Figure (cartoon, rainbow, N blue to C red):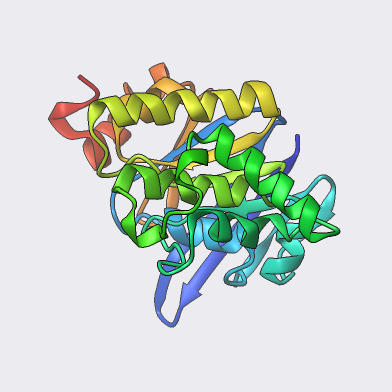
Length: 240
């Protein structure tokens, strides 16, 4: 395994956002993470990436405890995330946005440019490199978010709803991109997603959260038939 979450809990005053969650992720695996709004998915991402510290429990990356480290240290180790609400630097160009990520591992400006060029090419944004980020479409902005993360040189990529708001064609394209990142770049990916077609189509395994607790884990085909998952999340319109 490359990543292990052990009994991780986060309390905000009297609210328990994540409650004793444990799981592991293998190298080159795509792990889907689903659950209703408020289930604790983003809080979990925040603890893995170092944005917030867990109340208890720990995150282990390649055998070393990383919970408690700062975000930049965790990023340099090889774990990086995107955000549910895309947050580009709106008045910087697409290239300048990706350079922010590239400097995480570049030793010079020339090397940073090479890394950024390659990330933009990979995400199909190279022809937009001199465009201001605020001028991109939603689909392009989602790609920019992934390109900036990719430029940091991650081993584990945390994707927070990168397909939300996209049309069917754009969803299919992003699904292909995510699978290519795993197959060609050998990345380990944890993806939070509400687009059921997408998460079922890309995931090797799925974890379901409900009210801060893990209620199911397994193959996509098994998870969608779990009565507790259907009751708490999928409802009557389960993956049609």
